[in-house]
Image (tube, rainbow, N blue to C red; front, top):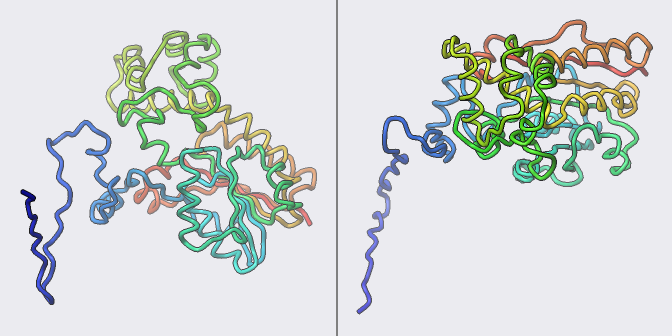
Length: 351
């Protein structure tokens, strides 16, 4: 005999019952999806996370938007390039200022996040005539412009930070928030993961990279201890760092772990070589009077940008450059802790 399931519909004019937010067992859940409840999209939880100065998991908050727009001064009808599309936060604001008649070309090397970002921007109404998207490293900017049959751009933005979506996903291996495979590749389909890279690197080379890529003061101790070892997970690497430096308190150890992860990530993705290629090709990719803005997040990146801009200003290629870096306001740093290390530099190509 078939059973009959009766659903009680609310009477016309009555208020439907309140839908309770999902509850999670335990005070200290271990699963990523359980701890970061905002990942499910609950507006109330997202608002609480943002009010605390944190970035809701699975999202990204664009940094120094007003300052970037002031430096780039996008105008209707112009061609813009966002070399690191990420979640599309900067691109969305630039598009609003170059339309009607303008177009933004978005680049990002991440095959996991790029389709999601393109779908989000398309959902906001930006179709092919206003927005084109390419899976490419920003070092490939000249080739992308040639493919688009665009001789040069009026506006170019490069945000060199790792997106919050990448950091917050344990499967990507960028942080130790939750244990995951030690990967760290921006493009998981290419190259070798961080675990394989660390297993092959020599102690001297790792020591040098910890200094150059993250200004790590304890590089001389960490390089020999970590190089040549096999770490399958983010937690194994973090535990090994702690074992080398047992004298550190929790705060100091956390900072050291973040610096080591940063240096390894930069090396695994060959980020500074890509930045050098981008800066070398940049003047050829800008129209006369074109503007470029670059957001950096550590001293090695900022030094490269500063030297490139100063050299091209001295030889007359750039008509004007930022004399000092622009930093996030104290208000932004309180509202978004991940903005704190950001530095903004800009340049204008000579007419």
